[in-house]
Amino acid sequence: MPVHNADIATIFEEIADLLEIENANPFRIRAYRNAARIVLNLSEELSILVKQGEDPARLPGIGSSLAEKIVEIVETGRCQALEKLRRQGSPGLTELLHIPGLGPKRVAALYHELDIHNTEQLFRAAKDGRLQQLPGFGKKTEQHILEMIETHVKQAKRFKLGTAAQYADSLQQFMQQNSEVNEVVVAGSFRRCRETVGDLDILVTADKSAPVMDHFASYDEITEILSKGKTRSTVILKNGLQVDLRVVPVQSFGAALHYFTGSKAHNIAIRRRARQRGLKVNEYGVFKGNRIIAGDTEESVYQSVDLPYIPPELRENRGEIEAAEDGKLPRLITVEDIKGDLHAHTTATDGHNSIEEMADAARARGLAYIAITEHSRRLTVTHGLDEKRLLKQIEEIDKLNDRLKGITVLKGIEVDILEDGSLDLPDRVLARLDLVIGAVHSKFHLSRQKQTTRILRAMERPYFTMLAHPTGRLLERREPYDVDMWRVIDQARQRGCYLELNCHPERLDLLDTHCLLAKQAGVLVSINTDAHSIADLDNLRYGVGQARRGWLEAEDVLNTLPLKTLRQYLKATMT
Image (cartoon, rainbow, N blue to C red; front, side, top):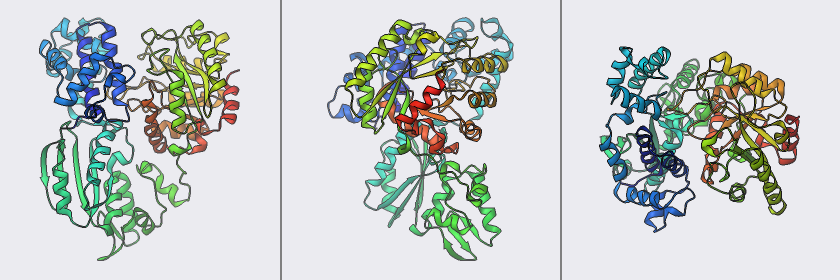
């Protein structure tokens, strides 16, 4: 079976988790976590490169040992190092790591101190009040873990958008190889750019359906065929992702695409609107009595109910139908609108490419500027910059800009917001920069009042340009910290600073609802990749998708501005 980058990254993350539970060397753990991130965000499939005879060790951050494991995984689908760690530990430990709020350190404490090996044992221990015996496990934490276990058990497995994209893109390419196929579109929550995806809905138009179904069933990542019919087949991929394929006639393609894109609430509202006009809308078309009057395109479906086309990202029944009716739909931002990236890291801290390499890669992607924003000194695990090293980097960037053509490197920092709201570096050095990004990287469990006050104080500092990943969440790994986002947005409005929408598929932070609040308040959002490697720059597509879900237009986004205008906006925050 083909091995995707996401498969390799999952293996490396599990190795890192198990090593951390064993209290292994922190540098070894970090190497696996960095490798997982690098692999996951590569635009090229490593399996293809390996089969072409290329050495994965050429990638920054991938040493010879990791490269050997990548080759092993690609060629065998297995990793002996992971299997050894699983044998040494308990098979249920990695299951515990999937429960939000339980990182490797807490799982290690549960394992070593209470001999807890799986979710069932954890649930019983929490019910009995035994977790409170451990340092850092108070009554509140114990109750939170109980709630998370119950939620985790109830929820079906979902895949982060960036992970689902690897499988969706491959499947789309595979289906297009069949000569009978005319058009292939991945619909569902994937098309609406939801943060996580439960399954994939693929629609195909074809003159003959039987050859298409046979081709689909031959896909070598399928582990189980649940059903195979003339117009619909359902399969399970090796990673557990369910895929539904439907072959639809050309005259019904638009109606089917609308129906299977969803959301359910949006579709119900459209069907209700159709009934008011004496029409019936379903996946086969728009009908007046028994006569089909529309459905070959999605535009025709909306026109039949007196509405303009509504982009998929807006279809959540959150006011988009009323806005369409009133002629007030936003002209949503596109990837092509983005002029630059205002959050990126290099080898100076925890990145994997040099400043010049990042700049060249940004230019190759059509960007006019990129801001280098290393971590500050407080974040020691990333080798954050102190005052001396930051001043040295400022000089390096100035010299680089003197010889670079077609791209400008901006000088910045991702500075830690400390618990009292102060910033991790003094004003005298921050004043030398083009922009300052404030970020919360510690004390995630402060009360709502304390966390909000902390951030508001930071935003009041003389040199503060934008708030990075404003809720601090990591999808399926860390819940957002408790903060009053409306007060944060209002503070940004009054202070004249900005909010980041972090593009990384594990963050996608701002939330779409917060994007809309920022838009309504007149606060500009900066769609940043937070790139730690060249490949991370390609995550821009996910951030733009999230921005579109939040109704953002180009005029609502800071980094759609040309460089000259952007400098004026940045300068206004640095006083």
